[in-house]
Image (tube, rainbow, N blue to C red; front, side):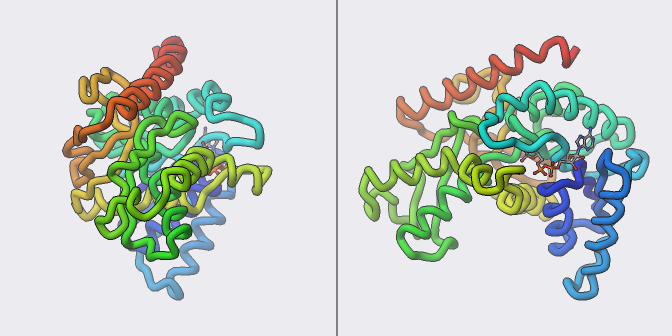
Length: 310
Ligand code: APR
């Protein structure tokens, strides 16, 4: 198993180290346009191996030839969100970067699984899909796992219970239009609505919606990376080990939920082949409407990229 991580910044480097520590690959290649950064970080990570007890090789590079024959490519290249900047502000700049990165990746790897992290997430995943010409089951966006993790962590804190027992699904676009599905949120199988008041749940939902911004406001010059990296690696773990976990991911919908040709977050089965199934769960009328509204925003933004993607 060879895993390439494009972008040796906060998310990319954190993810690369986590992949190595979990020994999810024999080789991890860390690539960035900045000279020296991926090489230095990769060497530093490699020198942690005797203490971290892993045998994964980590190589830092600026040359796409080193990414040849990757099984999985994690794309984190791009600009991070600054305070006051919406994910949508990043759109044109990051679309250009993701287009260039995807084209370069595909020159050296025949049939990789691409996991997108760059924001605005659902749109960048679409850019990766169009440019790579891979089957849509092999181009997947990381958002729902992160948004759900945030929601789960807030519920665990509120109830003072183990994280392990909390299940939650946050669907829709990765942005202000995300759709936390409270009905499928439970604590050891107990619906969260039996444990917390509707007002409390709503405040946690709101905090989840603004979870990314809350961190940007603290960091000032950068955005979240520990939880995003951990979430991407959870997806990689399910693929590498063919675990067939059910995780919310951004995938191309082709009629499911009444949505056509748009990347949006829904529950999927992730295994060795990538997206092995898209689950169509029962949503309330309001939830379905919110999901479709979220998809319409993504679609509109993707339509603005027609020239760039041509
Ligand atoms: N090719 C390769 N790497 C690039 C390119 C490019 N064309 N353009 C930028 N990069 C690299 C930068 O040099 C930098 O090292 O991408 C890296 C991004 O790292 P950070 O600025 O630390 O950003 P990070 O916090 O890792 O976020 C990366 O993930 O969560 C999203 O919104 C976030 O889109 C952003 C991405």
